[in-house]
Length: 323
Image 1: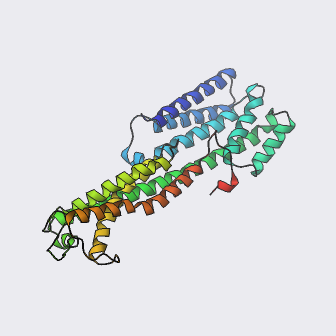
Image 2: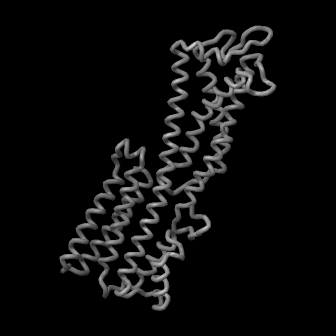
Image 3: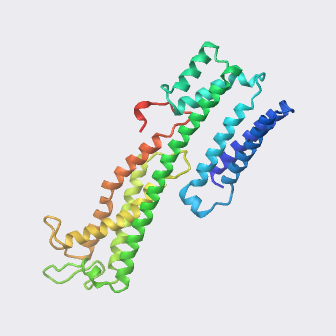
């Protein structure tokens, strides 16, 4: 089980304990309260199953099980607040808990948050039964805002994953084309200096020319990626955006090296009309493989920006950073 699954199942167990406590503190629940308790149990079972050990491959790729778990946990928390007895001491400080979560995700300008904060301030931070519905509405809005933040992260991760898959397939197709006898592809990587023809793998074009150039480009991109790690922050979200940013560099580097050598062959690069040896071709493949950083670095910045919009207990809300 992943660390996210461990944390989620532990939190579900905590919510289950709260439900048991509240049902035991009031043995005779009303019909409405019994329905709420049953709904909470349903949410907790769904969240526990979503964070279980077996993972559907499609769900693992898209991250839908993560959203399902968070959504059910949030709905269970809102319903648990409804079940807090009006005479229970826990109700007094439930308002501050809701206020803390709302300030992380709603911002100080939200009318529900402003109303709850004002009422709690005038009442010594204690919440009475008359504020329960306002607290429930505020907590629900905070959870919806948090789910929206996580949905943006999940969407961006899926875009990155799609880009990794598509670029990898394209790079693989070029290699297959070359091994299937695509002489046209191999001829684009060979040069004719004054002393004869030179290709990436020798004097004559080879089926492995494309594979060699792409492997060198991917290796150069991997080296550049290790240097870029120092600027990529870790994340508490379970969507692995930093990992996807590093993986994207590999097929991008392979294609960048391949297309770069083709551009030189086509005399598109000023000052370069022909390369004199196989090692020189490989050297330029390294240059173009590292050159993909010009594009992926911009994607890195966007990825960090998306992650910055996910707020937690250690981060205050800042309207200027909300995108």
